[in-house]
Length: 419
Image (cartoon, rainbow, N blue to C red):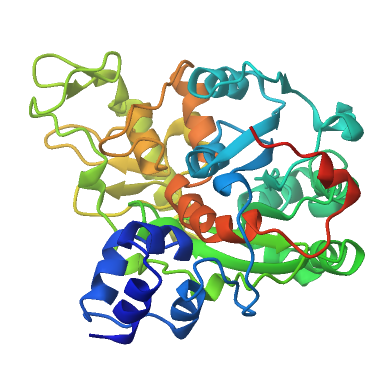
């Protein structure tokens, strides 16, 4: 018997419990148990006392592992979809876009608290005590596309953008007031290199030096989870060093991820028609998603023009055996980032249902994510969202560290009452 299996059985832990505690898939734990692969030493140490952090300090989970969290810049709830099934109770939601709020309330129970709009109008002291803050704060001031567009228009970007770029400081203000045990932030990969790294330095200085959180960060490509190349930086922080490390996560190899055929409509009658996305007895993709001759000609000319200039602007033409480039919020403009090949026809856009699958909101065996808005709005919403399976992996790894009882408790946090 291998060391891992001996420790697991000695501690009386099931495969499922180990997977949840370590933030890995059950399939990975089965491979450890069978000796097919060897886990990192950190994982063996982690399970030796069921809830032991990386520093060897044992702590107890509170109220059967339940915790409260707040969802800032919530979009359509990608973070909530990952943390809620793990025992998280969302007590506060903030999202300024009315169409995103429409999608959010269709998919989550929002009866216990209203969705706030502009975060600048939020009274911080009224939010309420919580264990975790999650936020995918607006990325346009830091993204490559956003910076290029603002430069071309002569506008400021990054923290010089007076509207979006300063929203990080709203997060800082809430963290400073409520002092939750942990936080998880997400942004574009370019955040780390923006303004020669100065923007990221400021963020880390505020989180680590001023707020005194222990902070970990890592760029993760969602391509190992969904058929899309999507690199995003995740920033996790804890009031104390609980031993959480991104390097201990079992992140799938991007080159071994799923292909587009896993999210495309099969069009063979094996799925029920879903008008207006698919129609007819074989649930064929609606013809409205096929590009017109005029638009297809324009996109080809546009791409060729930029090819001659030596850059890669333009569409990406892909099929079932491929993976897609990053889906952006601008997909609703012309659909040029990801186009699906069709036999004897012009390419087509993804349907909103396929976008939901591409971002991990729709997963096999689970209830369909409700899409109550127009195609234009849904493209923008999914393009702006987090890739749910990536956040699910991080959430599972963070949970034992969020729920741990620390030696010291902030007086404001003593008011937390888990239902």
